[in-house]
Amino acid sequence: MNSNLSSMTQPSLLIVLAVLVHASFQTAVSVLTLLSGHSFKTKQSQAKLLRLSIAYCIGAFVMTTACVITAQAAMRALVSVTSFSLVWGLLGILVALTGVAILSAYYRKQKGTVLWLPRSIAVYLLERAQKTKNSIESTALGGMTVIAELPFSAALFLVIGALTFNYEPTTALLYAIGYGLLVTSPLLIITSLIGGGHKISQIQRWREQNKLFLQYSSGLGMLVITIYLFVFYMLGASS
Amino acid sequence: MKTYVVEPREHTSVEFDPIMLHGSITEACLTVRSYEGEAHLTAQHVCKAVIAWLAGRTEVTRRDIRRVATNALTVYHPEAAYLYENERNII
Image (cartoon, chains in turn cyan, blue):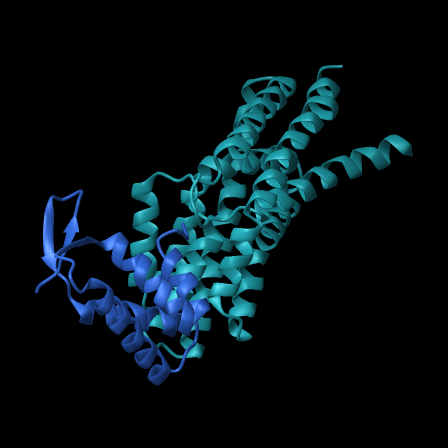
């Protein structure tokens, strides 16, 4: 009974932790802020701004879900050719390295919320946000943002893929959709804040004031996931 | 006397254009949901302050103009000033 309970709660806890860490990533929020700011500048109506923001959230959600499904398939293929404990070990190392990278270099050491993204990608996202005029472009922008964030989020996708690929296809798909929804929830909150009349400057100021908290909590969260993977999965699978 | 805005990276300089400054200040005000009339009026005040500061200077950088404009804008619209100062520091 106890072992049944722990085998059910361990993956769930890990998924919740991964969702919390992933939801605190800021690339998608930055691009949504730019998109909204540009809509105000060009005097677009509130209804159009909401349409663009919701389309952007849908794009981010679809791409996140697609990334989880891809990770599930990759893990299924990987586990078929190697041992489970080795997969967990490699994943643990990848998550740890990503956590250290987030702790040391998620934000650039300058004013504002400038992220450690290759500048060419950041400039491209900035320009795309300024050129976005309809819902389809906005949806594509949301998807692109998830891709741009992959250096930081790939490890989490692989962990979720490894945790859920063994389930029934429908359950695995539901996990992927649930993960996508939860990770996109900060974007929905910001969309509703902007729709409710909050100023972008207030949101940006909050992000700037709390950027170190978000950086350290997500970096340390990654390290906790690493310990969890090593103790409960890698050692568990090898014993 | 004309004032030139130097681009240190490109080794070029262009004549200071108050209309361009007016446009970017107006955009910053509109971004924080100011009314259009208020945004233009604020931009006028800021442009006046920057032009007064430029008097007697022949060469300045874009960063100088941004700093002076931010200081002037802070008086009229602190939220817009914050966004104007940080618009390149969001991503």
